[in-house]
Amino acid sequence: MAVVTIRISRWKPTQSVCLVETATVNPADTVTWQNDTADDVIVFFPHDDVFGAGSRHFHKTIQPPASGHNTYAHAGGAQKKNAGGPPEHYQYVVFCKETMTFAIGGSEPEIIVP
View 1: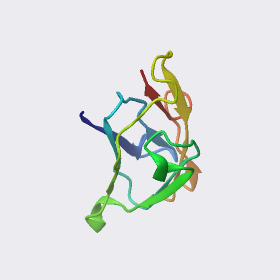
View 2: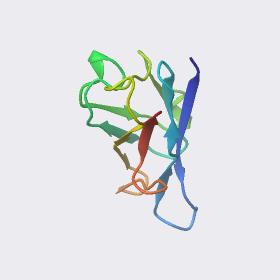
View 3: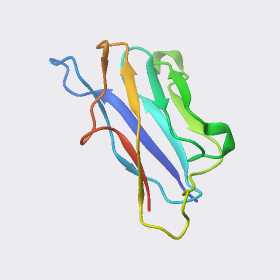
């Protein structure tokens, strides 16, 4: 049971793109999103129950570092829908107000629960 931090940052100061790290989250791990941009970001996670019953289709605005409130930890820990099955991949999106674009990841941002 670890805390996995997913950082959201400006990809390059000269480009209007935000980047979200891809994360592998083991069952029971807690996920924390950390906003390292200069403005709010909004995390849209459209999947049912990955982080417990209260996680259905959640969205959360995370403020920039200057606010002192630039992280959001989703309580409940990750869980698989099919506990004995193969790794499950969950795509989600992050909107960055600094660039007025959706963040990019390795492909689309995703949570992997092995």
